[in-house]
Figure 1 (spheres, helix red, strand yellow):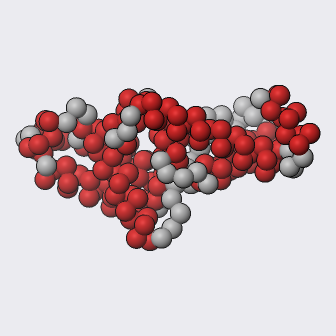
Figure 2: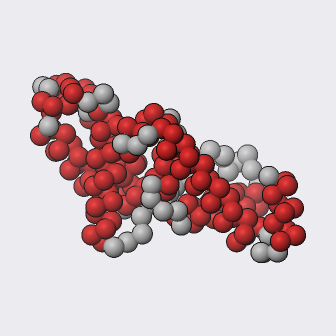
Figure 3: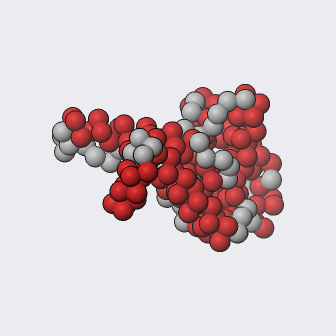
Length: 181
């Protein structure tokens, strides 16, 4: 792969890789360093990139692995996730905005309690918007395994939110909330 081809095909992934790394690291400088390392690795293997079905999936997998390695070295908790706000300040009253923000924080906390790979799968599917095939390539997993893991992750998040925030632990409240959902 020539330098021009690298610039055209690889460098445009910068925003995706940076955003993905930042979801793990929660520090933009660390995330930029990781993306830079990924670019160096991709450049060094530029002659072998043609044998991969998706260079983007490879780059995402490399980014994920490097982030997890850095997190293990720091011994910190990864992936708090960032919920995208698509609602404008003018469209919703302040009270409703506060409720949405509280719900987003609670959801992030619930996702944070998930084990790997459920946490990453939920991040990629529900927050990043990747489809199952892309996630399978990124994580080097079977699509059916991803579907099952995502289903279980969503169930765990739902149960965590119901038990911790919405029904105060009573069995009567648990059954009534489940009926609503």
